[in-house]
Length: 447
Image (tube, rainbow, N blue to C red):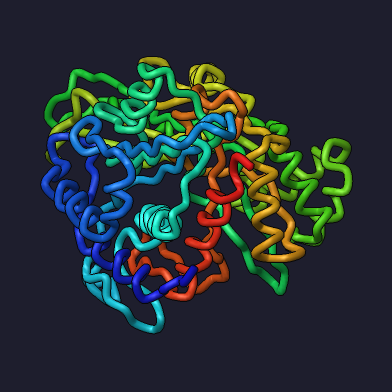
């Protein structure tokens, strides 16, 4: 089996030249760009489209299916990713055009190269290579590619529609693999990062009303001032720390393999439960560690009147929250209600509770561990929590084996990066490892 980096790169470049930007307003998402992407995918991977059925779900979601022999008796294996990308931002800040897919310094530069068209490319190239060899799996395979993952749900979310389609057909999954995770090289050490859960996501809006009027004769405590007080209250009173089981597992595994950079934290993680209060004190000093030990709130949007000399009749504040496994949206709202001033209303714009923590004892988890050892001998597989969010959360309810994982074969050594930032890029020499990982997992599953 020949791994052709140049071909993988060509496929990814073609995909990333298409500006498949999703919008919170479904009417502003350019469906024509996604349909163009579909044509490119057919051109790049004709054998996949010959061997698998493909249907469009919603406006431009994609669901592929391969009917295996069924000899293994295993439930289907599914791979998902998303076609959409975030807006490119200020073009003047990019070293190279954000949708140019140009190669410089041994990397492809452009929006979507790491998040997450590289995953679609790797799945498709892996399947193509296997099909070319006459491979016929003894289990069913599904691929699911949404088109609005980056806006985290809302009206017309593709992933729930794909899940509902599978439910309607009575499909249950034996395992699922999504974006994130990978082979991490840091400070001379290497480990495989597999996300076995992720935080919940909820956008909450606070609304204050006022009689408004001319700014020349203001009253105290108008609607916008009430929201200013709300902001301060939220900022100064975060949700209390919470010891989630997955973070306990993560800290223990990282300590066991000497992967915690912070010496003080590492010493404490020899007994995570017994040292929890001290661990919290250390984590609160670092924004990234702090996100591991509590449900977070980020104040992101506020609006008042449309003109400087008008007192707003209505003011709104939107905050983005990431909920730890073990807590719920209701827990967060109860916390908020204790803090907000009188006259401020609270409601949920969109969101979901955290998906269930997935198993570290399942067949697919063992398969992944075996493949990691095969490709990267001596590399431990570390179960972790993703503080962001993915489409995989929707699929947990149709996977009775609790085997929904966020894991890739991408090497994370600091040379690729920039997801959601300007100058997003992926190193060419990272592409082969991703394809190899999926080839090995596909061949091993169901044995």
